[in-house]
Image 1 (cartoon, rainbow, N blue to C red):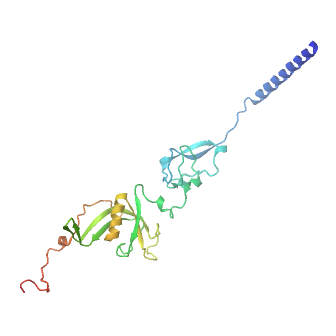
Image 2 (tube, rainbow, N blue to C red):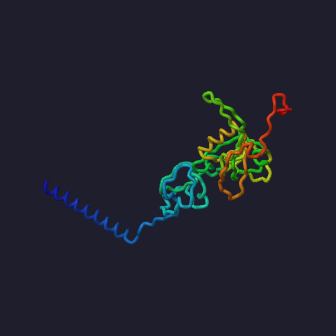
Image 3 (cartoon, one colour):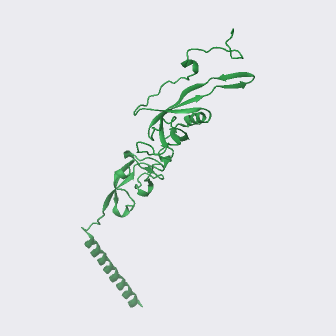
Amino acid sequence: MESTNKKIVAAAVILALITAFLIYVYIKNSEGKPVTVQYTNVYVAVNTLPAKHKIEDSDIKLAKIAREYVNPDAIFDKNEIIGKNLKESIIAGEQILHGRLIDDRKTELAYNVPKDKRAVSFNINEQIAVSDLIRPGDFVDVLASFDKEEVDSNGNKITYPRTTKIIIQNVQVLAMSQDQLITDEKLKEPPKTVTLAVSPEDSVKLTYATEYGVVRLALRSVGDDNKVDSPEIIRNDLVSGKGAATSSNGQMPGK
């Protein structure tokens, strides 16, 4: 029995020595042979970016990533990223992918509405739209005219005279009818509507004016973003004569 135990111990020692020798040989052969990792420069987000965000140069940077971890849909050309909008939010350090960008924004009006603005449309004709010479991207002022109105308030009659006023200034034209880009010098068909980018407060003014008044657009020159103090204009501001009273039969008094 004792002889058998000695044989088992001897065999275990021999196996341990062989194992140690093999490990030594493996380590020895591995020395001086570092693992080669190939890297690729990929554009990633500098910070977390929200959905519909328009990407600027400061939003992205090049990052060195092991080639095996580069997404097949990653973008390597900055020009394919700058100016594009995101379909959905991405987190800081995430690779910029083709599938996360909006490629064709011409049909996506929501991506062209400026921040803090609202897109509001109303019907137009050639006179309202400056002889149909207004184009998407132009800036306009909105004028509104209202008829005379008499209102009874607690037994008192309040008269609102006919008036015209610039109600909104320097707003961008987003679309004419459903066209957000018009390249032809002359329109094939007169646009039936215009869509403006206005503030939430001005959207209420514009809606009221188009519902209860007559609206005109005034085209601004390129680069003119000045706003003017626009008082209301009534008849007496334009015509010096106050008119003459007539009797019920149409004759001047005393005739």
